[in-house]
Image 1 (cartoon, rainbow, N blue to C red):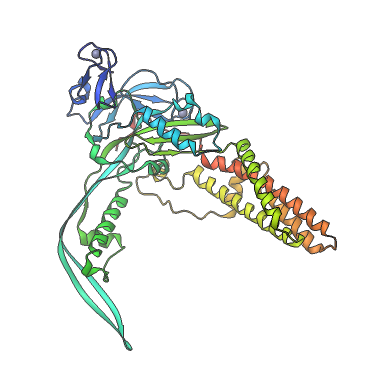
Image 2 (cartoon, rainbow, N blue to C red):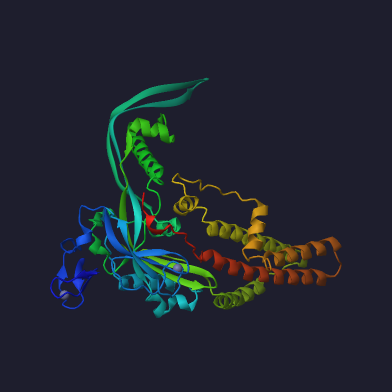
Length: 480
Ligand SMILES: [Zn+2]
Ligand SMILES: [Zn+2]
């Protein structure tokens, strides 16, 4: 803890004043004036308490030693194990700008639109569980300086001939891209970090450990080289587009465009050593039925990103209420022939089948975090950028996943499948009596309804996260 020079009380970072504030004598102090002896400026490390969740292995660090009572990653209420450790000193930090109260208001405003969300998500006690966590990012700075010579060409047709004019484009480039930042924590999903982006680096301050007082931080455990290519590519493309926007060049095809290596060579793109930075996030987790939902609020501008599951009871009630007026309305002027009715129900059954299949595919990718490069690189133990474009999954693999992950007890699509079969049977028999058609339609509508319930259940799985299970490697985290 950081002691008040005035009375010895506990100093915490106070968001409205952006200073450290004493809870007892209410004096405020400049964060740079308050240091512990171990926090020495010249050291590349600083002392922290690391809290480990006994259930999921998730780790969170703090400048205080007071016990943490719940885990933000898996939502468990439990006393976390603690140990003293050293952490690499970040170069910059964006201190929290938005108070917990402001964050709660932003979250409540967001949840007003979520009509079918479970009541617990709107419960005051739950909302009070927001915790201020500094999330680690890698910030890349890219420079492009020097003489640029590019080749451009323009083709046009005149009569039977195609003419191509070649141009040499010469010039000087002097471009800097500062703080292109990428999520450096493998436990914080890239998806969430993208949803609450951007952070504005104008509020960025030189890091000093006392800024963390009263807050938590996540550890940076993703290799710093992981996102370097992305940052370089972003700089290259931006500069190329800028060159192309020069009116005289607008109709030219410029050499090397789209080829990252050739753009890097011609623009003299240079990536400086990435810096560790910390960005503020209000974080809350909600655990139910073996899944966890996260709500995150950007601590700088209150942008909200929340996993919002649907309460099946509420949803059913809502749809029934909506169906009655539609039914009455359609009844007034619409008459459907039995054959058409059967075709309609068959079409709807196929549609629900497709939706269900897509949900399973979505859950497959989400649970394996196939798009989360920070996580994948950490899990595979390699520092290179893993391939995330592995979008194709074989049907076999998907079916195996469906039955292994407990989704397979009564596969939801079976009802729709039965509905389609029922329709086909009626068509084949082609009975004289209309009653058969009505019967077939009723059977298939029941099938569709059951599939829809399964779809909602799967939607809830998709809207939430798998309970995390971290494999930490002791004290060597962030040793890159
Ligand atoms: Zn004091
Ligand atoms: Zn946990």
